[in-house]
Length: 446
Image 1 (cartoon, rainbow, N blue to C red):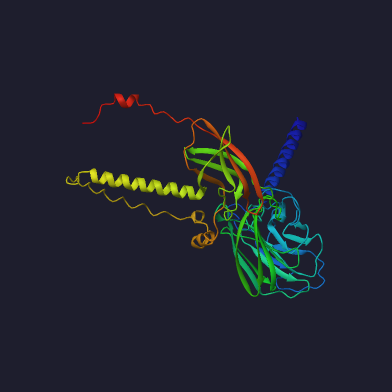
Image 2 (cartoon, rainbow, N blue to C red):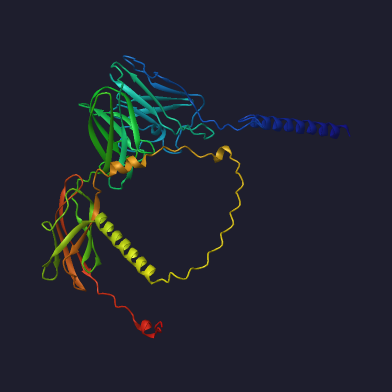
């Protein structure tokens, strides 16, 4: 009978050991992360140093530029993309390189992750230049707290750091609005690579500590994220002779090297047809009857053109006509109304109850947005006529119903001066016949 007792005591010891091991494992797992009951970590990562420091002159510099954070940052700062990439690559910049602007650099930039620091070095090596490093918002720590600030460092490998600046605003010429997050490049002539920055949410930018001289300033809608001026991306440029400070306005637009062509012609009414082109036309090179004809088929009989308008001009005339008609209708209605009988005055509605005062929590506080001077934007846009890919043709006589017509255009000019020709046809529809059956049955008013 002693043997079973010893066996039960041994099994009890094994059970106690297993329980102790499980408890130790639970305690070990619980020790990872924030302590129980403590406040959650909501502080974003902070930059504690960048080497070389801003303003430093380091001749013969060969090392990596190092950005030191106060904690480990996520290897994928923007939630996607791989590591690496560069400001001169032909594909989109991805991973950590999305948050780094190093300039002036010809070719890719190597950006590497080392837990709580980031190293940066141009693939071409360091040249004898003044370099500008801009750390963009978008780094995250391991708890997904986002670094929303920006940091800029200028250091030299030999030349003197300048004190001049170029600032300005970027607008979309065709869309008549600001261009948010435009890629800005200021290239000192006769060089071919320039200093980079990104316009803010108000379309504004500022590049400081430049040397005086001649620059070409580019603004690009970098839609594919490769930090280059693409053939299909809207951009603009302006040459600046920089002394101490300069402000510029850039009007980005697509620089289409293909000549414009007619795309469609649409019947609007018996004397009006709208013609659409494949791209916006130069508003300073308006079409007239010397390079636009309307022909009636099948004999190609010319139809006299009374007027050629831009779509904006046509819309303005339509709006004015509607406003005039509404005003005349209101005047007639006021005259016909009996003004001697006054309707009873409505009782004033009781004042609404005061809403309860809301409790503002930190998460409810409004985010600070970049101020946009809308008056300045309107003034700048008013300096240039608005491009459009549509024109409206007014004819001298009505078109024949159920007849086909051709609009022939020669010398339509796009925004970079390319000229194109083309024909486009349309059919004047049969006029709608109004059904008056119900009108005849409806009793007339006394």
